[in-house]
Image (cartoon, rainbow, N blue to C red; front, side, top):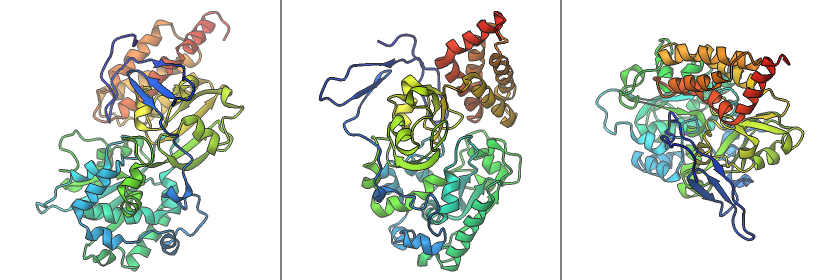
Length: 474
């Protein structure tokens, strides 16, 4: 039985309040385990994870081989690219839809569908492909590994995606601090151009495509696609109202698709191996492989490519040597970068790492930046630090975010030392819901969600801190 009043379910860009409780059930001997969350029940007919080396897309993730063109060709990049382009735009988009690939930048929107939004017939305006390589989400460190060690995967993906969208130009908007990554990308672009893989006759197809690198100045808000476009045009990075959407009016007022590094980099391999291969990995609607970046209190922090839907516990124990001090020492995990709500150990025991499973426990996969915190962590102080980050990074355009994020940060700072009243916990939660869903972009949601997760799962900790302060114990 679900206790409480229901609210709207999660959507791609903002989450509405939805009361749900994790139900536990005994597993009869010989039957598949069932993970029951709110009103949705998952049965794991097969296990996920332990990805085979033959199924890995990023085969030079750790930079053990040459990042240049010769090394890339040796690893299978730029193979049959001309044939892929020769099959036409409609075929490429159809294959991407069939693969089930969802955006790897955070929102998880179906990639093939997003690509199809670009006008099929030009009205005279050029089309543009823009790659979001800003990677400003705290805890995220996957795109930089692609650009540093496997840049030709991204370059080839830009050509194919650009062709599918009718875009002759790609702009890679890269974080200014990524000095080595930008240098390796430029080397890869120069090598591809010199080899005839880019330029006026890319891969001998007659299709013209050029790629340019644009360095950002480090603003978190420029990870939002319309703020990125504004910055690319030389304006302050502030999100635009939508509609109009970028596919109609984007950079320089022309049709534009903004997409993530990892999303584009996996496209050539999907098209070479076939969408059925990619769709066979992970659960339905959560297809493929994913780069997980795991940091915090694990024995071996790392970035690793794994199958979608791998259990969180298996991910940490298989690739990171487990939680520092053992699994029972786990306090909580932020599973998708700093903007998604924290999960307590009780949920981490069984949760799967994919879009739907994490949505159903009121968190999110986001960028798959897994931040692990053991029992030595002051969870209130950790979330307060995130609130300070979002206060600093708010562009100030929307009143709920401009005014609300400093309020959240101020109250959270007092919560750290217990300098508050018990009723202020509910006030803090109400402030977060007044910010969430009331801003142009999702930064308001990102500021609200960590606080909501803290109150939802660690309210007793907040109450204990306040009572200790009132009793003069701290």
